[in-house]
Amino acid sequence: MPDKTGFRNTAAKPGFGFIQALLTAFAITLPGLFILAAVLTFTDFPEKYKTAAVLIATISALFAAGFKAGYYNEKNGTVRGALTGLVYMLILYLASSIIFNDFMLNKRSIIMIITGILAGAAGGITGINRRAKPISRSNVFKKSDILKKYRK
Image 1 (cartoon, rainbow, N blue to C red):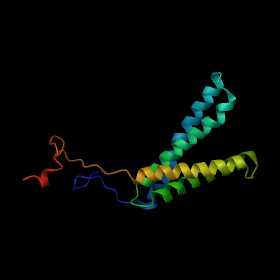
Image 2: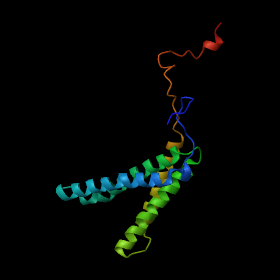
Image 3: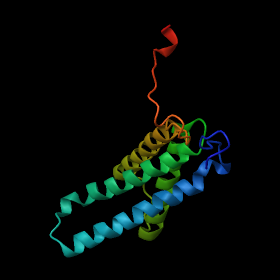
C-alpha cells in the first residue's frame, strides 16, 4: 500500500505474516499435489519421479511462504522464513504421523524437514531483500545523468 511519500509501506505486520505465509504454502502445495495425483492416475508417469515431484511442489510452496514472511518484515528474513519452513514441515510430519500411526523419524523425514527449513530461509532472504520501488512517475520520462554533479 503506498504511503504519502510514494513508496510502499514496509512496516512489520503483527505476527510477521506467519499465518499468511503458512496459508500461502498450503494454498500452493495442495493444488500442486492434486495435479500430481491426476497426472499419476491418468497418464503413464513413471513412479520413480513421484518423490521428486512432491519435493518440488513442497520446496516451491515453502520458498513462496518464506518470501512472504520475509517481505512483511524489516529484518531477520532468514530466521522468519526458516521458522515458517520448520512449522510447515512439523505440521506435515504430525499430520502424516497421525494418519499412518507412525511417529518415527526416519532418514527421509529428516531430509524433508531440513529441506523445508532451507527453502523457507532462502525465500525469506529473497523477500527481505526486495526493494520498495517508488510509485511516482516523475523520473519515468527523464534520463538521469549520474555524472551531472561533477560537470560544470
